[in-house]
Image (cartoon, rainbow, N blue to C red):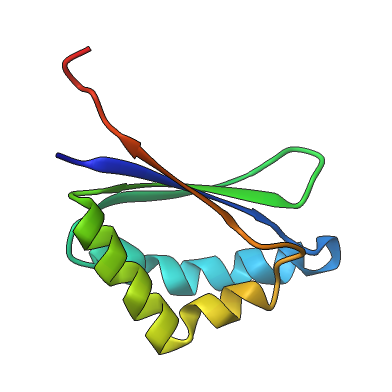
Length: 97
């Protein structure tokens, strides 16, 4: 069953534009990773908070992707822009409802 993963990242206000310029370079790899069904980036109005919503085929698919991001340095690149630790949430989908 697919899962929804949300990632909330408070970006340093002075770095938001630079962060958003980085995203088009990173998202194709995310979207083409095994198990990724969708990935969307949202920015909260009047803040520099980025809220990502991703749908993955399974938790193991996401975990493999996350490990790859850690090993490839992608997570470190994102953290250079962060004002705080990201907040990750994992949701089971219930399409029957």
